[in-house]
Length: 105
Image (cartoon, rainbow, N blue to C red; front, top):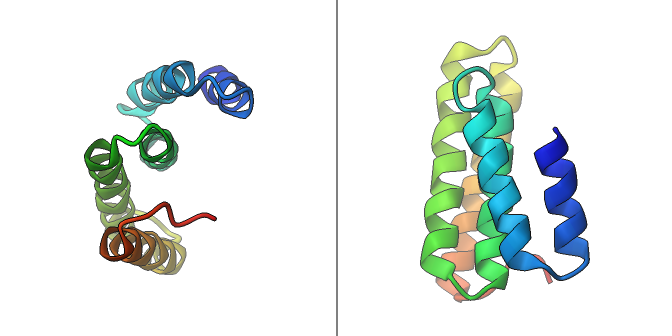
């Protein structure tokens, strides 16, 4: 979780490149054993890409997050939660794509 903490600190200081690097490190670290945290790190890295005007890269990261959460519907005991959250995330992504702008303003 240290990578997530560092990334958030960098993000708050406006150091978006460093924040993205730390979110990527977190996603890589969690990838083999914690899909939920991998998905969250991917979503946050996607946010950084959007803020850096690398929207295509942001969309790719958000799609990865949606895919992981969809896969967790089948694999998790909390399937209803993952179904609801994957729908929310995918809707946010689709709305952002259609509007062509950052969805969190």
